[in-house]
Length: 436
Image (cartoon, rainbow, N blue to C red; front, side, top):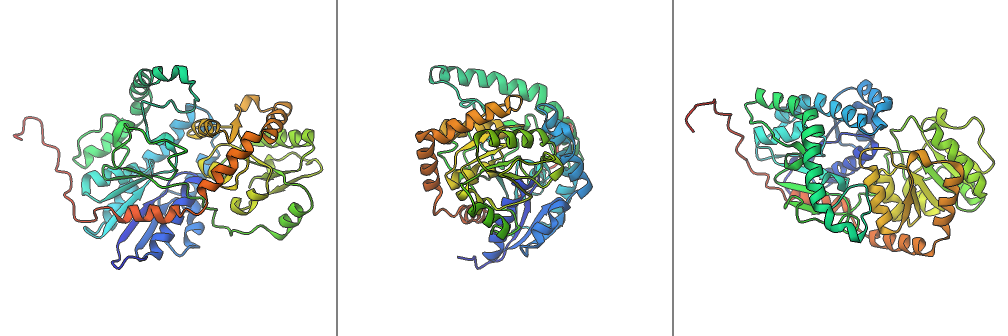
């Protein structure tokens, strides 16, 4: 039911399409429920936002977004984090100013993902109510789980002490040196005290943290923020229509279910992936559909039975697929689970290795490292997945669990549950030696 009191909702959506599109769906639903909504993101996504009728607010430039996507270091482990964080920190002051200029005490709430550092600073300085929305379980750090690894049962007792040492080392030598100098310099300008460890606690809202994934995919941990609430996967297609093109429908009708290959909306360095994929499909004697907006990534000549399309809505396509092979983005993975198809993940960076490990633990697919992605090895992995009755039954069970849920509505209800009242802003830092 729509709410009776209009409130202002600022949604900050940073990242690739897989990060932005679910936030667009949240914004559209909140607007339909009677709120005044603005989505703040890069102009690269302006049309996708505007097409929903939700107000678009630009942060950054399209040139900056394209430069990030086209930077090969983005997909290299270690270097990619530096590229990502640099963009986040550049956007931080502008993000803060947007919140400051639009904040109406008692009538405004902010929604942001983990990249919205400026929104988190605004919460600290202005007292604006804040909900942190996480699409990926890896962003909820725990000492009880090692991201990206399926730990044997016999080794489980070692996870917690090893994680304690590892997270402390990562904070001290990687994350905090990369972030804290610029973050705390900006906080000093606002008379805010310094942050000591970014990812230990500060990155989450102290009011509300929403995980857009189910508890059977990521079991809640006792050391997660106590204000964490899980809904389920948003299962939102990009804003380009939810129907398959007539040409693609005809191709699907003309033969058995194909293998579907994609490396996501932001990957512009996937030529080898598609070359290997086409050859592996040919070796298996199976049809294949290659999804990419960058046709220069494709082999010059595609084998018989292999088709390329720039886009197809997963909700309509995947129920007609034999299997999906992809990078491990959480949006792509969740659509595969909803469709009940086996998945083979070739993770590149960021949350993708952890998503792949969680899929393997479920028994709904497998993964392989990028250097091992060769035609014969891929064909062998896919043949094993497609022949395994246990994988097929697990995929069907996962699809059944996701059927009938309204994750966007659930998320909106949690956002509406925030205390929207006027909150005190953070007092200025006292000079050294000043009386308390």
